[in-house]
Amino acid sequence: MSGRGPAIEAHGLTRRFGPVVALRPLDLRVEAGTTLAVLGPNGAGKSTLLRLLAGLARPSGGTLRLADTDEDRVRRRRRIGMIGHETFLYPALTARENLVLAGRLWGVADPAARAAQLLEEQDLGAAADRPVAAFSRGMGQRVAIARALVHDPEILLLDEPFTGLDPTAADRLAERLREAHTAQRTTVLVTHDLGRAAQLADAVLVLVRGSAHEAPPDGHADATRLADQYRQIVEAASRSRSEVTA
Amino acid sequence: MNVLLAILGKDLLIEWRRRDRLVAMSVFAVLVVLILYFAAPPNRAEGGHAHVPGLLWVAYVFATVLGLGRSFALELENEAMSGLALAPADRGWIFLGKALANVLIVMVVQLLTAFAFALAFDLDLWPIAPALAGVSVLGAIGLCSLGTLFSAMAVRTTNREVMLPLLMLPLMIPVLLGAVRATQGLFEDGAVPASALQLLLVTDGVFLIVSFLGFEYVLDD
Image 1 (cartoon, each protein chain N blue to C red):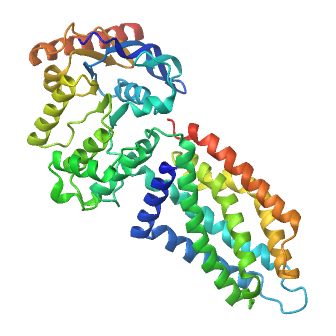
Image 2: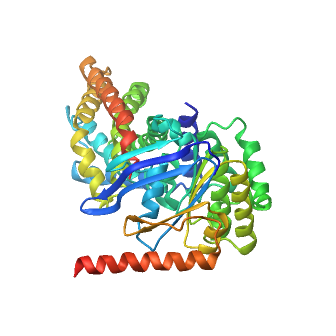
Image 3: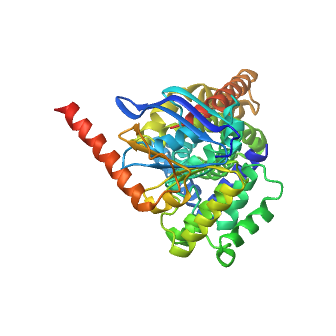
């Protein structure tokens, strides 16, 4: 923990879609410069939580603060870089054009130079001027990673960022996330990959059916131990639900 | 302003590469002109062109609705709309970029439609071409301002092809009133009536302000 205070702080954060409660009142505190892994089965509310943190959805209840300020939504979005379920890329544009567009939207001083730098970092220099429509899932994901980093954000929100990446690219992303950690960036990582979560996270939050459950006390745990703890939490949550239903 | 220009450039570049929307709108508009030609044949008697301004705007509106329906469809691919919504700018500027791109595309279609109309209904539009172009642009701004907002709202609904015209057409009546009266004045007297011009300008202004402010909420889940 960095001791710089919370980068993200939520109290009673709730999200409903009509009668469906996607996220039950959640208290969350992510210290600045740390990595929080969010785990949970499909439909647990992980992506909903990430979209609330990103400002892509409005909470149905509760409060959310970034970096201990009540800044407006526009300024909050400037601090955030996000990788979603999808790549957010335009298939008809080239990788370079997509990144230059993102640079212009985020007010980067020299979008073309920044795009070139990120393309090299992602080992996409040779494919930079090909339309994204012609890219494999993994290549598209690498462009999406570059897009999320285009404005050098303080907070990274990552929804299954390792999806579609080959082992080399996945290791490179993991290395990049470790560098972000060293550089005191705050990261919220939604993943099903317990091994990566154990490697990268300082803290772990498990969501089951929209409810937060007691997480293992520390991150950077042994992957096997984390997997055991995760299984116990999910099974306990399922049992308690069955008892309530019965 | 940078955001506006970035979105405008992006939409026009994608349209230039694909051309699917422009081609579909243009072909559709010409087909509407053809149908109107048979449904309400040109009448060379005095006053026989009285209905032509209305017919011209019917073709414009139908082609515009078709094109606006596709405006946000391209934002659905790879969930690009969320990428736009994350941008640290007032979302009104995103709206203006999209709306301006739509206006420019609609203007191209209006030009082709007017040409087809002139051929089909044996009209000499050259003497009133500059004024007709001005009225058409004002009409296009009215149609595309609220139309862009509704297109963003409708695109994530299950029946988006039906939702857009249902939302948009009733509210387009003031724009149509102003545009048809202005065009009628041009056809009959060679001048745009001041009341029609005022109606168009006021409607455009109101629609632009409402859409600029409302767009902030449209991009949220």
